[in-house]
Image (tube, rainbow, N blue to C red):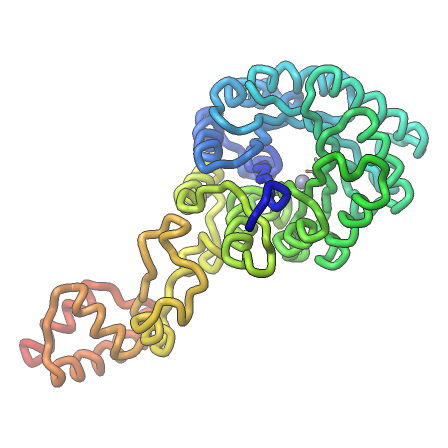
Length: 388
Ligand code: KIV
Ligand code: ZN
């Protein structure tokens, strides 16, 4: 039986980290629409933007904060008091506001503001305390945590917890970690840092090595109970953990990952299409869960199997992610069973001899065309009926 401690909170950052993808800028109205869809599908926390970044971001976060029905509305702020104040001005309009403040803690990132370890520790104490005085829901992130020295990471996480952070997010900012390491890191932090078992640990993975989903799930196995993700994996460089992937992985493989989310998975496809349209980022055909081919089967063996039992080649039902059904596109790898099924779908009845004849012509056509469409099939039926 699942209990509250098995619940994984979904933190969506499509409107913040996703929008930071070069070229993915969305208009004000598009952001409001996406936020409404996220809220409606059961996302627990929506990171609506970076209020100090621009007047437009501030307006979007404020309006999303006013309109959201269920979700916690979060804004991002650097470890600077004016950033945090601006963030609070925007999110405080929500019934459930959160301030998310961060600073880069790895050696490479510490060099940028040119702070010593002690100076940075002091800054973290000051900024998290300030955020917590404004809002009782504060998330803190040590950016580039996975390349931060272990001792220093423990030290700054402890400072943030003592200063009042309620969620500690551990970002794999450059997609550098691997699943075993990701699980260990969270487990060891919870065990080692005083107060570590009193806050929620979150995982925030980037996909530079294609491991963002695996790393996020491993972090959950290690004790993280918040996954940060985006629709379609939109995000900087190779993107972030894809919401649809982690949510469906937890749903389909509950046998080995006994955790659950409150996402209404039937709403996944619609929001995926909307995010693709408004961001101008097409979804790759073979993208897990939401790609055009994720529930499509062309080869004869696969189509035959699917026609007999959908579980032969599908581990989840397309309806569960909001797709009408499996598709069996006809192409040069397709067999007679799929052709017969297609003819039936089209309401065409043919005898065995005509089917044989249509099949020969279909194979010949399929060798020349990538995909054979309904009209092509109907033309073949006419040709064989007319005795061409
Ligand atoms: O990738 C990252 O480190 C971030 C932080 C701002 C959390 O997006
Ligand atoms: Zn990020």
